[in-house]
Length: 312
Image (cartoon, rainbow, N blue to C red; front, side, top):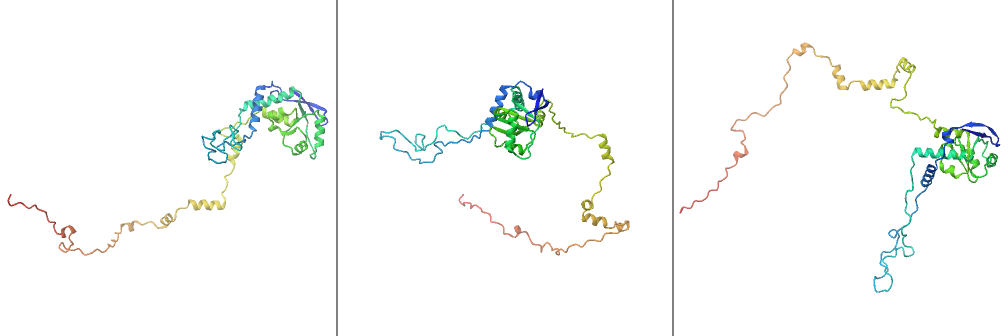
């Protein structure tokens, strides 16, 4: 598919070949609707909150006695029937978020772009360049290319001058191509894209998109890289690192002393060893002088005997 490319004055310069899988498919309205609803729901804050009768501040005293008044029965001044009471079934904070899978989101963006092309609402411009932010120049460019209503301006990369030039224009929004979404495309009548933005869109959502394949082994090296690594001399350690390594690998002080001590000769080994000095012990006592055990020194306990009746 070919799209005309115009300049800032609205004159057609050339034709641009675009990817049919992005700009030439049959729009899927069901997926477009689902993507639009999902985006709008995800923008909701969900912070609306009201107080029930249990949250309202007020007295817990019964308003009046239950019977004998001729009036209605009431139990609390915080009841919803009273002014300043709680709210019945009021909104509470909640999450309105929805989810959509990646294939459907990509199909929705391609359907929106193809729909703009089919309706003649997509305009490709060669470039948008401003020496300084100027709203008047942006307005003249939009009029030259035939845009009188709302417009979504899509650039290849974020440009502050383009953003500042279109900031004061009503119903005009500037987006980088990577942030293109279904909601903004459907909310604006015309879509103005630069050539760079078209290429970015084809790279993101086109059929020729190539994703990098990550392998567990990592990138393979060529034979030349292997030979260069093998021929490369080993790096010499720095002096400070060499000292630290030598200190770490050196033996401990006790091991150093043992290694420095001279080895015993065979003659020294044959010499008898000197007897070690024994500790002095107390002189041995005779059996009579030895202290007797405590059990033997105690008097024998008297045995209780029953008195036998002489009469018996």
